[in-house]
Image 1: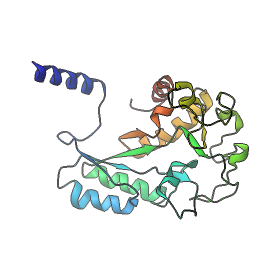
Image 2 (image 1 turned 120 degrees about the vertical axis):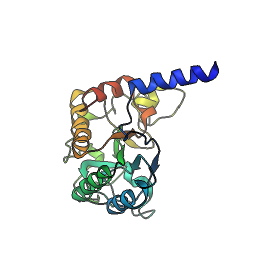
Image 3 (image 1 turned 45 degrees about the vertical axis):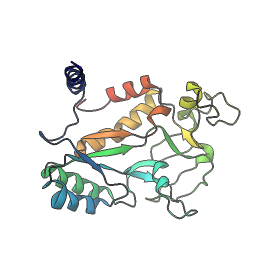
Image 4 (image 1 turned 90 degrees about the vertical axis):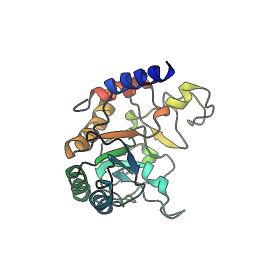
Length: 232
């Protein structure tokens, strides 16, 4: 009976959400920090022949460049724009990877950083992976564009503006996570900018997303954001 109930629960979940993998393929790998050209080759040479269904890739959007410590992995979780331009490669290389992987039945899943932008303490300038200007101190990200109106600074109720109590859902979802500028995801304009970014990835051929920092977003905001996406 327990086995039957488990199968029923699994069937119910799969009826609601499709992973968009090729039929018969369910396993995916996480090729963290890999270059797009190398992932394309991996899809063709190893993943497809061995029956893998997909690859989760690192965030493909432009991020701040951090030199101290030198180029840590977490710099990729500090966006400055939604341009497809990182140390993994440019937009053309990303498109080529998605096409080649799809052609051999391996789907691409993007690590989507939509909860926040870069840290509030970062210096203004063009120190980013694509050279775009940004000014975190003034909440100015012209390549999106975002301004001070698009963040939760006035909504957070802590003195520091940071999450101070992880048992308080309002702080966790309305305040800054380790200094990262928290986007006001309930605003239609912010949702539209994020939707443009995610829909561009869907147009390229991306099969799905892993939402970074999902627990720092209100579930209702995530639900509304998904309504703006193509093919959902």
